Image (cartoon, rainbow, N blue to C red):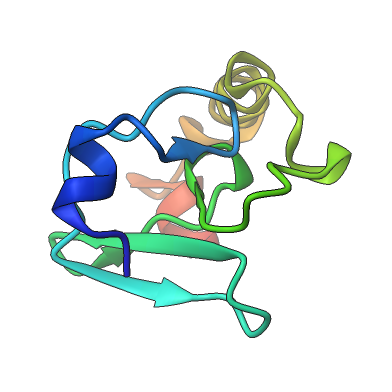
Length: 96
């Protein structure tokens, strides 16, 4: 788990390259110990861009997808599918 001192030293970053500013109260550590996935309000933040990079090698190219691209994917889903309703219930509620 990332220590507060590592955060204060500005040693840790997320998969998207942004610096970690707030310590995680709870997190899941990847099997190889390279990443921490924070849990906030009972929700695990599993987006690669939000993962805290724990290895000194930095994030691999698989984590390099800009966060803005991921936001666009979510927006596209809701614009095309998620906001539609069936019998007064939104499609995203029916799917998830």
